[in-house]
Length: 271
Image 1 (cartoon, helix red, strand yellow):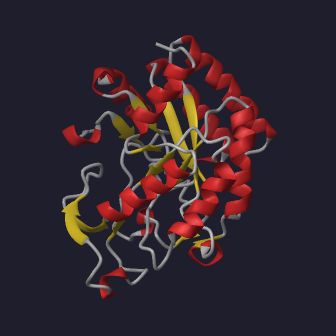
Image 2 (cartoon, helix red, strand yellow; image 1 turned 135 degrees about the vertical axis):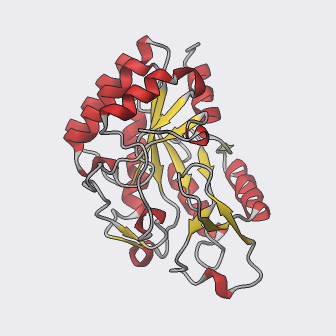
Image 3 (cartoon, helix red, strand yellow; image 1 turned 30 degrees about the vertical axis):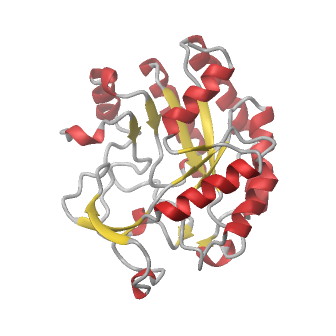
């Protein structure tokens, strides 16, 4: 298995889709880049070759994200085993989820957290809530944003250091700052922080290209092994306004996930 140089950055993204396509997300979010027909998963977290390569290149990264392209916990047993296989690498681990994790999964994650803490690392759960008002229309099949927001408290009380992701950060015509403010109000007491991210797409399922005022460019995605250019919607001014909104409501915005994990570790007195 060959690994491109740019695919082992500080925050290393892994696929939670198996080598034979198993594990593809059951949710039908219209903004999902992994739903693109040409998308090919890289570095499956379920592959022993992936773990071996990560071990051989351990000096090149600090944080592992073992499910960048699908809902990790739609198969809880497989997800937990995959996480166990990553523990010996002694890296911080975070994964995004829209699932409502049950008692068994949370208990297993707490055990993994204990193992990581011994080595000076942490496990942090990223709760994805990129919208509120149009979620039922655009995030088809997912638990409601309100239920995801409530889970932030559950995960915090379980010692799993949750934070909230507004990823992708869509244009105001899809997601207003007002509704993001409501998400912050629902979660700020228990969230370790907030992150935002651009919207990558090849097929214009949301019709963004019809609005010539939007800052959309074409780029090769630096964390995919794909030579083709994708469209990317990245609005720095909007991102700054959301950052100010988060801070005004008592939260903290982080541009990079490893920075958030370092903050958690510093607060916990972990070197």
